[in-house]
Length: 301
Length: 264
Image (cartoon, rainbow over all chains, first blue to last red; front, side, top):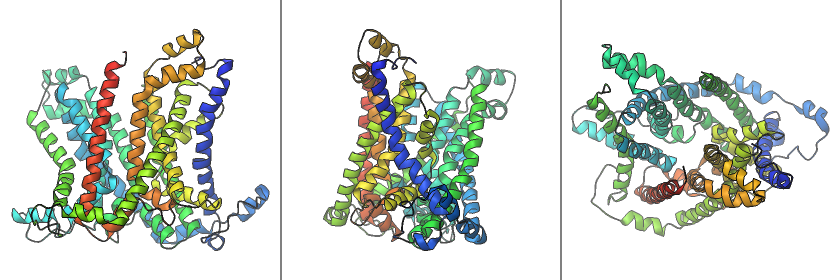
């Protein structure tokens, strides 16, 4: 691309790159450094309004001298935090799997529908994503409550005699995550399924394979890139989720986003909240890197 | 003929879309419920809409939210278009890897971390928290979405037209404003709309970076919802859903027209 590289374009280049670059440095990278720095400070100096240690930069030496691992050791000593991390990973994994179970048939059916319908159906999958996340989670409260519509409906058709306790449990959180993130699962699945070569399925059927066999031996393996992408797009935001466990989950539903929020807003321990944030990011880096490896491998083959 | 199981596809479509849309439909229906209780149907009524418009807290929160969303998404669109253009058209430059990373990272960054880090920074430089800090925060994460949308649109077009104009002696700035920008306009508009809805929707980041006096609509909804389901919130939700649905229909209409006119 030599298009925009003339001598007269130099200033244009500088502006086009420099302005967004500078913005991201100031509002993304530096804030992250602030979190990192604060996570290594002791609570006393940082209780709001905390005295920023930034003005008195005494060089790298003082920086390392002031490093304080107390917050991190505390995180591992108190089982609340370890349990929050583990519970987040558990809830996110189960929800991702359930989203796959719900999303796959839907993506499959859309990919197999006629050309005229396909675009409309895809738009219908995306549409809820544009409406407020908070409102969509809120909509489930009225349905899942003990005296809510789901229990009312199930009781009236005689399926249950006593109301189910779903609201304020982990199950409500699973439902909330599946519902909120379903478009993220369906779209990449649809994208791989729609590109699937129909002649492979025909060949399989001609050779006498039953539809279900064809699905497990041909369709599903070929759709694995979509499965990986969909699971990634659901899992990553689900781990750090705050709204869903707070509104739908119970008091005993532990998720790290919720713990961080409480640490910050209720306990007002900013350094500890920062340490929680840094560790959360480290927890997320592993699946992100793993996914990138998979994506790269797919790109090569 | 493809091996098909039509009944399976139909069931999947019906169940899938029922799952996606029933909760929203129920929410909308109950906003017109005369009764205050979710489970009791007291007949059709518009009284909760009336209550809503008399609720000054909600009205002022709506104003704050709207101002924040318009300003933040406009900043985000300008910055994001520049960033997307830089990544798609300007080849190699120093620090490109870091730049690319900073554009992509906020997309996977948990909101609690983004919110916390920005707040700590605003406190460190003693910037007064309020509407301005929410705008700065929203512009930052939205610009990354715009950059990704614009970049993918630009890589879809080859740069031969731009190159031809440069060869014919047009200034780079002229080429950008007369050729590149019109070509990617649908992506820029889509980016603005995406930023707008992201801003309209954000609870977590705004809660962190806000100060006294600047309460956004999601913050209002959140605190009301924690106290329980109220038909007033249903009414508010219905209005927001209506606005967004109208916006999406207009946006897809613009996109369709843009595509029909765009040379292939």
